[in-house]
Amino acid sequence: MSSFSESEARSIIQRFAVPFFILGTFLIALLFWLVPRWLGLQDAVALRHWVALGSFAPALMALILQISDSQTRQDWMQDRGAENLVLSILAVGALYFICLPYASTTPVQVSLWGWTARVMLFIAGGAVLYTVLRQAVFPQSLQGWLVWLAAALAYPLLMLLAWAIWTQFGASAQINLPEGGAGGLVLSLLASYVYLFLFGGALGGEPGWRGWLLPRLLNRLPVWVAVLVVGVVEALWVVPLYFNGYYLSGDSLWQELAGRGLLTLVHAVWLGWVWVRWQGNLFPVMLLRMGMAVTPLFIAITPLSWGFLAVIALILLLNLRRFEMHSG
Image (cartoon, rainbow, N blue to C red; front, side):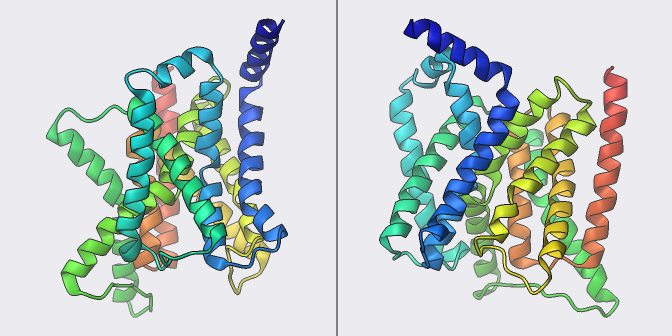
């Protein structure tokens, strides 16, 4: 009876996998983003850690759906899987403390709530990192590694170009450089890249959005439509962050929501195009997402930047349509 019930439950999950994923992703995020605030938690540092933990909801939900399959569970724990999982968790924790002084204003000492979220963050990050590394396809040539480097640097370099052109014509736009000269800048950049790869959306979001949801939408939708649908879902997913105090701005709420939603949709086109062109290899997508997270720390986004982003997104979207027509 139990065997039949488990098989039946697995069949239902597989049949409605996409709705399960979306619903689960929203619920997990809401749990970490809103419940601490509703419980009266006023510790801003602790809340920041709970927000980071909630950002792992897409990857965690994808992981839950993957290991719901018994064969996947067996594969997951083969080849010293438990030992490697523990090592991944420890590695994420170690990198957190190494990069923290150079990539974040978060203090090392936090409250009990903060430490609770921090430990859970290491566990979530380690589990997702372990899974991603098991499935990763790494370049076999120097040219391949250079392409990956280009994926990590394309977005900040484009935003730097837009900033340079914008300021060349007398407009003001801020650029933030850390103290310590060139050495301080390099150290801060490297630490920020690693820190935000782990905790800025690349590791927590992309294994779910582009690694799990997008391939399944492609079974039902044209590729360019599927890419946009993922962007819309992701844009709706971040809305609760405007109600827990994480996103603060002097603009009206609707202006903020519209701007954030549009930027998320534009980013989704970029990320989706990279996923398609690299035939589902997730690592270049995560590197591009990492660059998107790092850039605002150093370079102000100008109106010209928005124009660059929108035009390139439109070109990439048209390219996806043409790519699909040629593939068909």
